[in-house]
Length: 168
Ligand SMILES: [Zn+2]
Image (tube, rainbow, N blue to C red; front, side, top):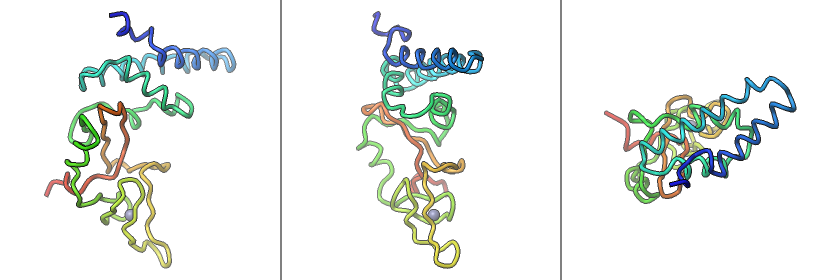
């Protein structure tokens, strides 16, 4: 099916064009060009692991991209799907069922947060300052979070680790 040729999809074309513009503008195209191959390979990896089409995945990534591709396409943003800390779900409901209602472990204060994105544990880190660590901040989840990908939404993100996923 021609629709499955990744070089023909809109996501590929927009990323390719963005990379070509930078190559012309700044010179040194060798710095930018490999990102295209990386994104394609990673989209194919996601396709293989999820049963989705690589074209749909790359289109989705590009349509949601709102900053520079050099920072957007990285292992921490689109991690390989392997191990216990990168998990795939069919729907948001399936994700929520798996998480349950026991909250999330904040990577900074290690208390329990009700939000998977912004610590609301109320733990005081220093006098008058409670923890408000953010999963989407500069240091993310500091390697202590999880990455969840929802197939029906073609969307993945890093969140604090659900308490229900912690091993005793
Ligand atoms: Zn915290």
